[in-house]
Amino acid sequence: MSFFTRSAALAVLLGVVLLLGTTSASTAFAQADGGGYKLGPGDQIMIMVFGEDDLSMDFRLNDSGTLNYPFLGELKIAGLTLAGLEQLITQGLKGPYLINPEVTVSIREYRPFFINGEVRQPGAFPYQPGLTLEKAVALAGGFTERAARGKIEVVRANDPTAKAQRVNLSGPVFAGDVITVQQSFF
Image (cartoon, rainbow, N blue to C red; front, top):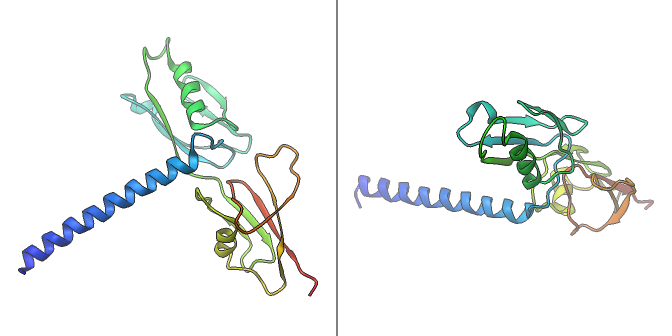
């Protein structure tokens, strides 16, 4: 096989791998989001209005879950889904500003989750759709020798009562969650 043929074959193979990786990542995001992901403080989003570059931009939600959007002012968007935010902006821009705006909202970066207690590297970590408690502990360097693996509690960011719930390692982790691994006595 000549150098040119090998190079061409390698380029085609690389292109297929990149295409499949992009498709599976998009599919994973769509499945994980399922239209139910609720926006909250710390999320970074991209708002695109087709044909309107001056209205297309990135935002990071502030601590109060709001953002300042051109022509619409301050919008309280914490708790909205991506589709809900698209609808809110579309309705706000329709009429005096645009006839039929086409708005798309996507997540650029999820807000982090937090893990503390008996893990090797406690702190904030980037959320990823499909994250489990076991994977979250691995991101934090694993358990310490004193960790009580059966005593893991999580305070869900979307829980208005903010009560700690006991969870197991196969349970899901969501953006904004605060996870605490308790210490064992023996």
